[in-house]
Amino acid sequence: MAFNLSRAFILAAMFLTSIAQNEALSQYALDYGFTMGTANYLGDIGGDQLTRRDFAADLHLGQTKLSTHIFVRYRLSSAVAIKAQMGTVYLEDYDNLSSNLSRRTRNAHFRNSVNELSLRGEINLFSQPMLTRYTSKYRVGVNAYATLGVTAFVHNPQAQLDRDAAEYHYNQGNIDTNPSQFNYDHWYDLRDHRTEQLTYGSAALGFPLGFGASFMVNNKVRLGIEFVWNLTLTDYLDDVSFTYADPEGLDDIGLVLSQPSSVVVAETAGAENPEVYLNNFGWDAAYASPRGNPDKNDTYGTLQVAVSRVVMGSSNFRKKNSYRKRRPIKRRSRKPGSRRVGRGRAKF
Image (cartoon, rainbow, N blue to C red; front, top):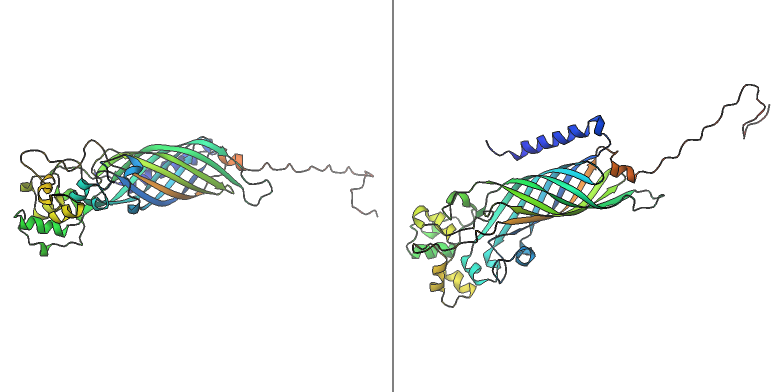
């Protein structure tokens, strides 16, 4: 059965809505909205001068891309909420942006659109129900929270052909197609070309965790900011993980995509003997030449702002943001014939 993110999200949203409409739980709040922000990736491509390092040390901030989501959130209590979220995270990176000799010579790159559906829990860490003064026109409350959950996603890594690599392989007799016949503007689906002669699926799981803060404005709108990093169970967001594929099992396009290096690239990277050094970046029958690091899965993260509309307004969190209404003053009615005259009334 095909993995259908849209159908799964609709079912999750209907489930949360049905719970929120239950009279027994009507004191809890439901809100829906959208998020938008940045996306970054950490994997086998890119990096800096040293070999792979975790998290910020290897991030290419210049390759920051877009991420967008829609979500439904159901607040179980003032301390816990659950959120169903669906959207797309765009990722991209290039070895030629690295200062590491090996990575620059490998010369791999990719782009990927990660379509994800996640179910997350939010645990409140800090709450200030009322930031504004009692007499303020706007009522604003804030809460900070930690979030964690599970994400299911589908993805499709792509890359373009490198002209120098195509000419190198043609001159070496590795391919038969004249490099002038290739389309260097087209983005090829890397999974279809089996660049490492391994088959991997388009669907995978991840575990998002992070922190966020949201502001409730007039008990109607929530504004927030959230940072989340997704630890995935795949090493193929960038199509680089294991070893180079045997050219016998590749067509000409697949070979150039699998081995995008060339003498020109090695010289530009600063190799002392480019032609000899280049032997490390292709398939070898004598040993399994590494193309990536299979011991580390790929990860990605987002930094987003969120806007949502509260459609049920009697949650515990909202109650804390509401003003206590004054009790109306009850006036005693006069008995017939009473001589007491109400204040401000004329006698006749």
